[in-house]
Length: 242
Image 1 (cartoon, rainbow, N blue to C red):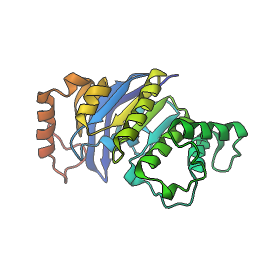
Image 2 (image 1 turned 180 degrees about the horizontal axis):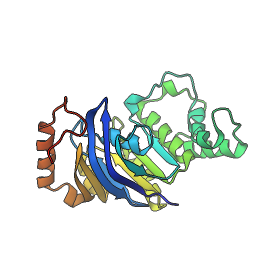
Image 3 (image 1 turned 180 degrees about the vertical axis):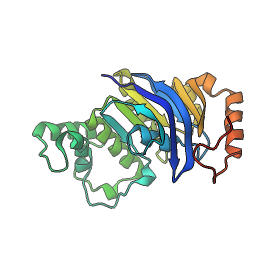
Image 4 (image 1 turned 135 degrees about the vertical axis):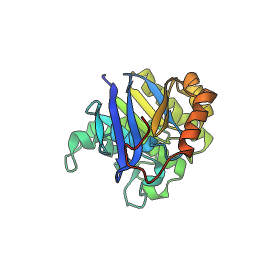
C-alpha cells in the first residue's frame, strides 16, 4: 500500500495567526513518526491539515486518498446514544456513505475489531457508559475497520491507563509492521525515544525532522523552547525573520 505524505513549503494558520510556518519534508511509506513540540506548536493543526480537515494557506500537501484520523479524545462528544458496534462500523463510512447498507461481512469485521482491542462482548454497550480507556480502545477499533494506508493519531495514549496504552501501542506497531504510515502527536518524550524511530520536532517552524535521537538532542529541544518563548500571538501568519 502507498502511504507517502509530502509537505511542500506548507504554511497553516488560524484566522491569519500563525500555526505552522514553511514546513517541507516527507513521511515515507511505512514510516512510524512522532510529532512533538511545545504547547501551541501547531502539532494538531498539522495533523488535521494532513487529514484534509484544515486549510493550507501556502504550499501543498500530497497524500493518499484514504487516511484514518484519531482525534484527541477531549474533542469528541460521548453523549450521543450509539452503541460500540455502531461506532466501529462507522469505519465503513467512506466506502458505504452515510446511508449505505453495510453487508454482513462488514458487520463481522467491526465485531472482530472490537475483539482485537479488548472490547469483545461489549458491542451493544452504549458509548456513554465506557471508561476513558474503553472509549479509546473503541476509537482504535474504528481505525481497524477503516483499514487505511495512513493512520494519524492525536495524543492516542493520553488519559488512559498503562495496560490500555500498552495494548494500543501494540496495535500501532502492528500497523507499522503491515507497512502502513503512522504519524502520532505525542508529549511523552521517553515513549517517543523508546517506540518511535522517526520524530518531527515542531515549534510552529520545523526544528528537526529525522531519526528520533538526533531530533530530540538537547540542542534541538532548547531551540524549540526558545522559539516558543518568542512567539507573538498577534503576528501575521508569515511574519517571521528571514
